[in-house]
Length: 146
Image 1 (cartoon, rainbow, N blue to C red):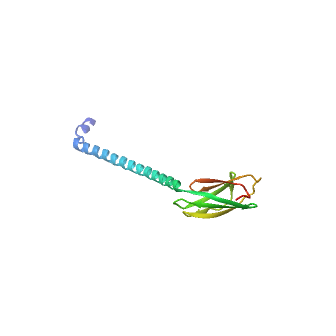
Image 2: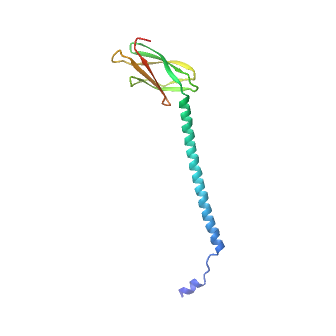
Image 3: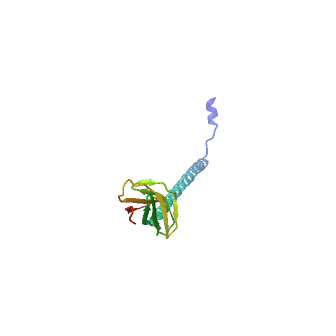
């Protein structure tokens, strides 16, 4: 009895089987293409963002042009001579962080910045300023001599 059930059944035609196989391969191809395209676009965006960041870092130009002090109150004159605006985020004196709020400098601006520091002796101080993009500039200063 079971043999008669299978004898009367027909298989799938070659054309239908070919079409089903073609649809499966085509859908997999479209899926792989979309994943590859989105991954490539993501990598391009990351590279473009990093390149823009490096371009801005290269355009930053600033320095301390003068320094003075009265006891523990120090004043530095910072000149931004670059083409872009910058933000000074950190000040270090002899590698010690000095508490100071961030200061914005427009392009071609000279700004005075104040901070307090109590040196342990009257030796030369190395004042370092750091921008938000990580660029730094150091200035050697002997207290009492401007």
